[in-house]
Image 1 (cartoon, helix red, strand yellow):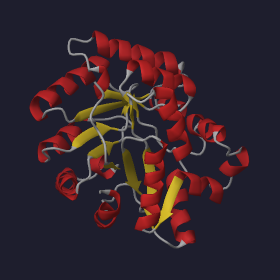
Image 2 (tube, one colour):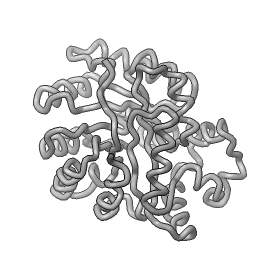
Image 3 (cartoon, helix red, strand yellow):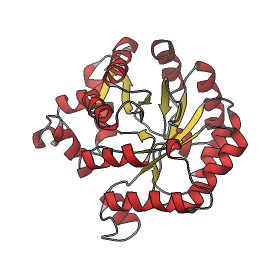
Length: 291
């Protein structure tokens, strides 16, 4: 059974890495505003305490990993945590799993550690399935961009949680996974109508991603070129990946993902500091995004 997730969620580094007390308070407000999921990133370290913090302070909202970095967490422990969270908090924990990127893994673990991402992901899923407390297929998603990983998401997971993608990619993901899988893309947003200011915030966010082949190769599949990656990213690239403008402009991009086949869209509100809680922006966007 596919995880029952619809609506609009919030993807936020602050909910994971900033003050736990403020994260709990923000999570309670986001739930009250009507957002349907909270998504936490992972580049190593203690992932499960922040997840528990959000689950304990809320009652109905889904709490998801976007993503659990499979190089950095033992699959048996991850499966046991899924079981524990489900027993304690009901069917509210959705495990997004991803194979990450060579520069991060090679610098964090050891040079050359990152290899065979598809086979590594498949082996991680095998280990979860063989654990004493397997994670149901419908309770896990894969961070899938290219055709082979999308196929793995179709056959071994309940769907996909792609990051830094366009509505065109969402349409491809829906076609690849069929109608019975969950498609839940992340969408970066800047609630700012001045083009120069908005694009400056977007470029600051994109700077760390432009040289990651998993992303750049995927963008090129959809018409962007190597020239678009130069000098902080062209306006064309920035505008394709990050929607900026007023509430209506942001709602329109989210609607494009839905029209392309997304069941759920999680927005990442960019304000210049990923560890800030952009609570005013979350509040302003709620009426436009939550029907």
